[in-house]
Image 1 (cartoon, rainbow, N blue to C red):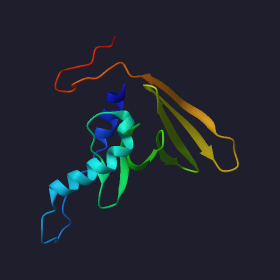
Image 2: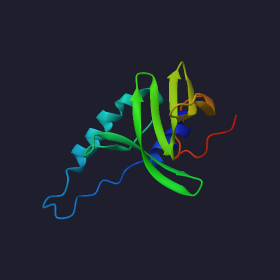
Image 3: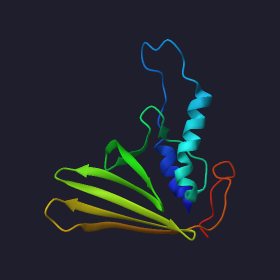
Image 4: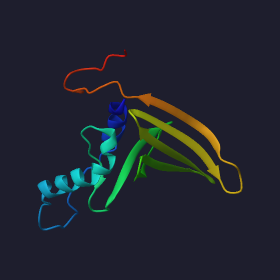
Length: 141
């Protein structure tokens, strides 16, 4: 279950490259340690993660949808995460909770002066550990 989320987050990993004109290469071990520490906020999702930008001290979701691409703030909460996508005069806000081996994520279209509209509802159940991707595909059953 969480490997689907892990794949999404892994796809959102940021390339950490030194800024032009920087005299020293970054300490990659320190950057990786910083990422690992910051991603403890997502421990309930279990897995190997990348995607925390120590320079910005923030998480980013890199999204490809309907021929468009963008980077969006990805925020841990006490029981899951949230992320938002601006869409013209409205916002799509996704909120996920993780509890008792279940992930529930909803997406709401929010526009000023209007009631929110639920546009997405996903429920996943953890079925066990996996060594994906090295061990091959996860069986559908």
